[in-house]
Length: 451
Image 1 (tube, helix red, strand yellow):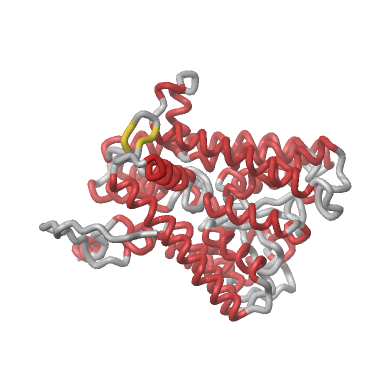
Image 2 (tube, rainbow, N blue to C red; image 1 turned 180 degrees about the horizontal axis):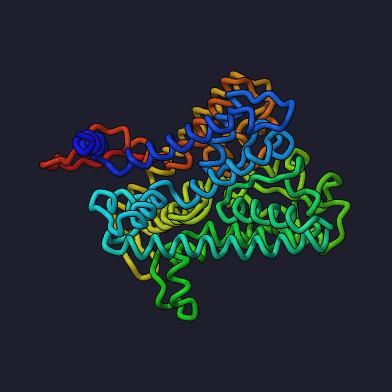
């Protein structure tokens, strides 16, 4: 009887996207339930359901936006729950579920392979066992290295007890590699703005985690032979480097004389803080400078970088650097009057071009609608509201400081945006489709005037 009931439940989810959305929703619901308990909050602090829901979704969607201060509001139990949710959201719920199934039964069913393939972007289902094992091992190894480096710095440089230093190192390593941006200080990482031993390991974890597992594994195999890289790896690495350099240059130049950010620092500290600030909009959410004190021009640059995000099949959010690059290739081909869109001596498939356009337009649509709604619900200006919305949709976690001031309705909108941004607009809407539709005929072609 139990077997038939389980099969009936599985049959309800015919599309992998439906399973992914359901899995993330279930994880967020479980996290909300745990954070809503009295044990999750510090003694004397009354946990609110809206705070528990917002924090759980922010953690499992590896965003980092918060309505309450993480360190002072949540107890050690609550912080551990947040850390587990970040890890689960970063690795991917379906990846973890498939891993557990492998450990218990030693094999993976076909449907589970298809579901996990959709989550990990694995080219062939038969490679899934090896890919998932590599993903988990690589993730844990990177987090362990960053945790050791941070713990050593906290213990040696700041006099933290060994246990406390290890905990701080582990929490921030997991938060950094998974591009979550949760910190255990009220000012996030502003107190470490001039400490390269803290900022650089965290920035490295953010960049590596945001490259995407397919790119990371290809670089590990053939990092010395760029000519043998796939188009995906070339696009991801090149666009990432360009955005990192551009972000560093824009923030360093714009904020160089700002008395509330880089102004009082020395040259070396300014360069370090400028680099860190330019790297974090890849959807990490950490900040070593006061975001609210930045110039509006820096907010606009951050909006653009956050919306683009990081690499595909990684821990970063946004529309992804590959989507941005494909749109750039489409524009370049159109300007040159070419009939095909080429990238790296390869012709991009028409389906890839349509997917890039769909993802970008869906993301832009979410930003516009949510910005309009929040402007109607809050007294904050367009620049701050737009910044908050883009940060939520791109699962970044940076904020000008208005998150806690939003009404409950506004915080629920941000919660929905974080969820949609993590599972992906395309995944979310395809999961709601009743069935796949295949057109069995072609209509006559007709050209219309555009532009």
